[in-house]
Length: 210
Figure 1: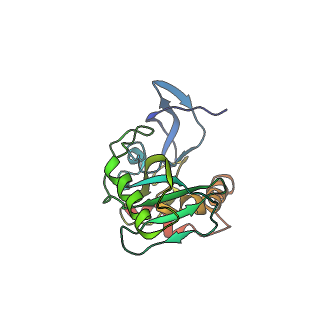
Figure 2: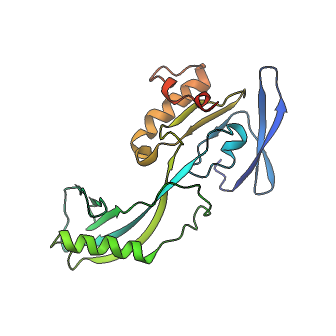
Figure 3: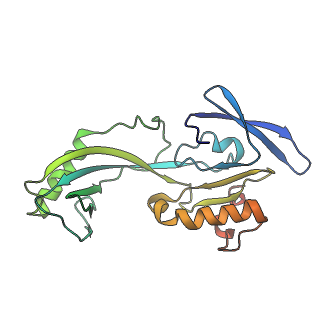
């Protein structure tokens, strides 16, 4: 069963080998849980209840969809001019992003992230400057999001320190989609078998934060 809601806090009971989670409070209602995986991107307030030293940061990126007169098939990455990136889609739209904000603690609410018009305009003007194909392209969407980073910019994956049944998988930055399958498999192995065998989680151990 999929439940969409805001996780407000963790519910603890004392176990034999460490702190044990009995569930979470979602929108004011306690939901029982046998195992908890903390994988909430840059929104790290609940994560810090289990791993206080793992402070999450978000890097805000704006993006636009620009529709040109034909379907293109080559992604382009620019060095300079805000380092824009262009990803063509097979419907004639082109996903354009760049001009990242500095890392910061995220206070904006998921789903209500502000889209700044000036940043979207910079992306559009940059594309018009570097590409004749984009000079007359229609802007169909303007949006923004946060990429999640740990304090040391290395993903945090593994069993939460001093916890029996809490696991962490977050901080993948811009590589979240690419690394999602391997990360999910490794965490599932850790939960079911007690050890990840498909890859070593040692470099990503949450215990490195103390």
